Picture 1 (cartoon, rainbow, N blue to C red):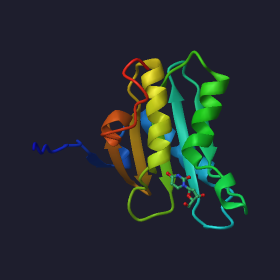
Picture 2 (cartoon, rainbow, N blue to C red):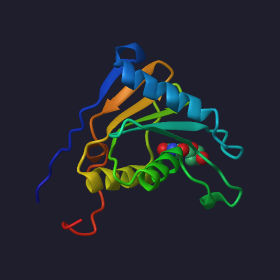
Picture 3 (cartoon, protein in one colour):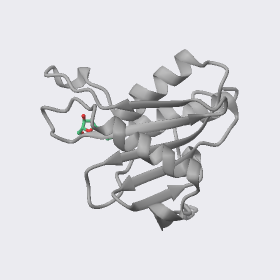
Picture 4 (tube, helix red, strand yellow):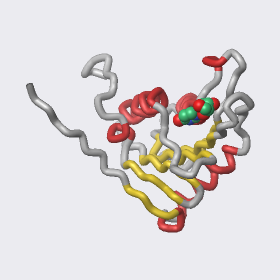
Length: 154
Ligand code: THU
């Protein structure tokens, strides 16, 4: 039997410590949050993605009264970005919710974001925000250790 530890480097900082481009991404995520449709959970989430081609794509959670038919903000933004700009990798994601602690991306969205990271062979920097506090993880792979893989070829 062998046991190993998985260490995930996480950086906490204040919003003003981010560079200009990242602060703008956080602002876009907060703006997107105001467009969430969350009448069932009242939990509004906003996301902004920065693409390699310079575009910013935003999304928010969209709920449905037939519960599983809704979608998280991350996947709303991600699938739009990948379908609209299939040649452009995503290089950063900012996620914002009205919470006191930085919101953590759910498991399903981590796996979906990881697919994009693998597809383009490019790390996605993850910024999870609550007000003026930011929690940073340098890639989705680090955010989702022991992830699902169909085969080593993908
Ligand atoms: N939600 C997101 O948009 N992103 C996450 O990472 C976790 C949860 C949404 C889904 C649902 O509309 C609401 O938050 C409450 O779970």
